[in-house]
Amino acid sequence: MLPPPKSDGRLEKVLRAGLFAVTAELNPPDSADPHHVFDAALVLSQVCDAINATDASGAHCHMSSVAICALLTHAGYSPVMQVSCRDRNRIAIQGDVLGAAAMGVHNILCLTGDDVTAGDQPGAKRVFDLDSIQLLRTIRTMRDEGCYMSGREITVRPRLFLGAASNPFAPPLDWRPHRMAKKIEAGADFFQSQYCFDVPQLESFMKRVCDLGLDEKAYFLVGVGPLRSERAAEFMRSNVPGVHIPDHVIERLRKTPKQHKRAEGKKICVEIIQQVREMAGVHGVHLMAYRQEELVAEIVEEAGLMVRRTAGGATPNGWRAGRRPARPGSHDARRHPDGND
Amino acid sequence: MGLARRLQNHPRLLAVGYKANLWIAMKLKFAIRMVGEKRLARWLSAPEEFTKRRIFDCKMCGQCILHSTGMTCPMTCPKNLRNGPCGGVRPNGHCEVEPEMRCIWVEAFERSQMMTTYKDELHILQPPVDRQLEGSSAWVNLMTGKDRVTPAGWGDTPRAGG
Ligand code: SF4
Image 1 (tube, rainbow over the protein chains, first blue to last red):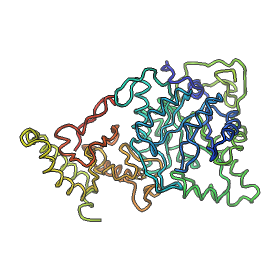
Image 2 (image 1 turned 90 degrees about the vertical axis):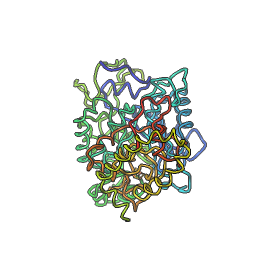
Image 3 (image 1 turned 180 degrees about the horizontal axis):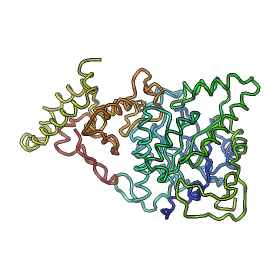
Image 4 (image 1 turned 90 degrees about the horizontal axis):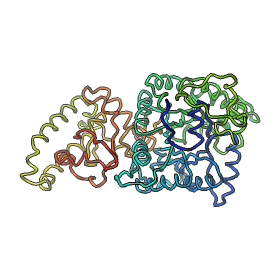
């Protein structure tokens, strides 16, 4: 028997139903116009189960994740609110979490956060009052015990599906699966990983994860994204913290004629999705298409993950995390558990 | 690297030192009642800072968990993480923030693997830092138990510090 759901959100429903989930990152605007958020969300919402609102990722200032979530929930979308420990202390974060739940946010992703030196305002003060694991535990306490970290009561508890990040590609590689276990112990219900370009490394990581039985305890979404060109790839590799791109991927882009580079980058992404989809312990993908949002729909389509809307598709309950149901057509046909959208 | 800092690469030896320290601290508990916590702190913080800064580059957070982290001070991580490495560790094992420095958690992991007694304590979930204790003597806080006090909503308390 599955434990009762933690949230009322679609992402959790899809995962619990054993369907292959798709989430995507919304590139936050540098603008005060809400339509920039709505336009981006419209493209993504048609192909994914939840939209990630980033919290000044790469330590670059953009519209805040709380504000994006306010706009998205108001418009009826289901966001994953990212919370990083870099900019706010425990008092501010707990307040934001309550507010987010009140607005209708069902998912929160707890992150350590890239350091201020990665951004364009390296002179900023770094906070890191909590680390991501303490943050997970704090929010879990708010949800399950109904109190703040201080022990003070919360009258109506936030109902949240708690996420954490995982980077299977960063040293110490042997520790990474154990770190995931610690995050689950602290309260993580699902994971979204860093960009995956190194499938063999992911495979050995997932094997350890399954050996430790972690695939039965939390859902794992693999981070993927298209590379624009070898130059973009090299830039990411050396400037975006934690991104690991093997040489052969860059070489493949280099060999591609200029006018086909973008298509090749997309193709690499689609291939990676198809490979990780077959991997034990993988429950979905998380698409990060920095400044290439228009590609997200094409990637989802080409990877065979496009939603086939079947009216009245009921939620088949009783599947455990890590077990994909074997039913005809399930390989490329995903049905919405809600059945109404 | 100085001689004292090189000691860090002998975590088992340091763990013996830690155990001795723990034993002495527990035996000296009565001293708190005799001389008072404040005076004891005045006597102990200078020697504590002197030795621990030299060996561990200790930041005097006042709630030492060194033995759980492979005798590597977690406060030397530029992000002050207490529960393990961030996702930004470079492929060569160096720190995201300071490219010249090895990630302290890569070192903590290696060192903890060399240890016998406290090897698995690396997986303990460490509670948030009580910033009120910053700059105070962890040895005295160990004797009074202040280093193990967690916020009421946090739940269970971790094991003894050092
Ligand atoms: S790379 Fe290691 S030392 Fe540097 S901030 Fe991350 S965890 Fe801390």
